Image (cartoon, rainbow, N blue to C red):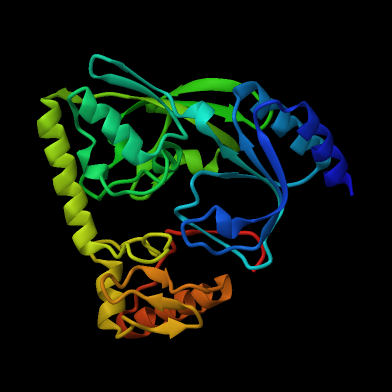
Length: 305
């Protein structure tokens, strides 16, 4: 097959990155759900990332970017194409005063730990948010009151042609659970964050612990999930509407609507994407019947269902 030829060939010249074939996406999503990707690559070098993009273009296969897989549901039939995940080569942190230059693949928890160690305050509200900085930027992670987009000074981006550029914040749009980065074809490689304030490391760590405890009290964390399934409608909570519609604890196969937070669907161990989609459709239908509200997905659907 053409994809096998192109990517087995490039696999021989990539010194740092890993190329995997028919890789189960269940290994790479927080939901622990998803069929195989034709090609799955963990990119560990910027120059090799360019070669990967070039090979994908030659193969004619669709290209997908995966972070830590915390906000996606992959179909049971998998992904026909190439899935690229940024590895540790993009997890660096450089702190200069109140400005932070950070790679896209660093985990949110890793970034907060680095900031706490240097006594920089301003991102503690992100404590407990899973995933990487890249995903947090694309989805403008946070709350309606405060989200990471407000701290962005610029974003480093590589398009599928391999061209890199630094995009100033003034050319980007951040909104509730969304950003203009979602529509751009390429990969976020890093960002410059600003507006942080000096504080004692102890105070920052204490604030992070408090934010984490609050999130843990509200959100279920004992079973695999993809975080909140739906965006909150204007002026209302999606979880509250689902709860009032009587769907807490509703099951479909191995999937269940959380009794702790109704906007979470949990994988009880052997859930399929079909199970999750069955609950999603039921939740949307029931909430619309009861309240006339159309719930919009926050989780992203990838692959073939």
